[in-house]
Image (cartoon, rainbow, N blue to C red; front, side, top):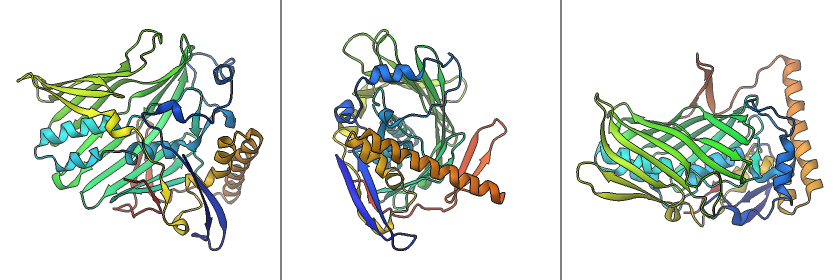
Length: 392
């Protein structure tokens, strides 16, 4: 589904612009990928013919390789596009252990099945994405373009929940595919309990041979220093070398106390695009903690509720003409529109350089760590309600 809205007015006075919103990534997967160009496998492989294995990867993609949405939108959708509100359960559970298991289940829910052969747009510097789902308000900003770094701040004041994420993907080519490590800190704060949960991200692996596909893989650590409870999860494929019809993805791990020796409390086992269960080590009881069909299937496309409140930096506005070209498969129009967006950014960069100015994010304070990473902190305590709404 696609929602196109003509916007008159806005923060810069009287102006007319367009916002194009498309269906979120969901369990339905490739059923919504009818915008892809033909011969996509051959097209993808042609991109890597001169790339050496092990090298860092930076590619300029033509619209034929893009889905009609930005990385910033995909990043945000993972937390606000859900059928069942698992995040609230993290805050309302009675005990520290119950809250931790709810956080583990919620961390699984933010994964989305991706589509081989197409990627979101690389966000432009200063691009924003502002969406609300009920009382949960989400704001993202692209705080760096080279390297690409995205910041997220999400709050629910009524439920005392806060998310602060800073994300930087680092892709590398490995001959048979591309592996992208997602660097940065993901922090969930349950303010009423004074608990902070730090959550790693799995890697994204795009496989070319022997069978094309996209998977979330690798080890993830979740920890809460206040309670001393931790989890280790391992994401991987459930099929051998890409063959076979069942390409659903596995997740295994455990929840344990970080005291020495580490005491395992629960074992985690399942598939993140089906169900995930938790086994109590002491009693042997098995409980389903996550059902993907209930959480990330049949997701509804966000809608613009307040057109005049949509910023000109909003992802769905910045890329509207490109998205419209892709959806209609008018590749010439999409290519021209994408070139206009990119050239505008180069022009703004030249203007800043001529004035000796450095670009400063509008919604986040940014710092670099000693290890060369990025950290961000939101300027405002609470994210305000957004003009774009994710239906409940």
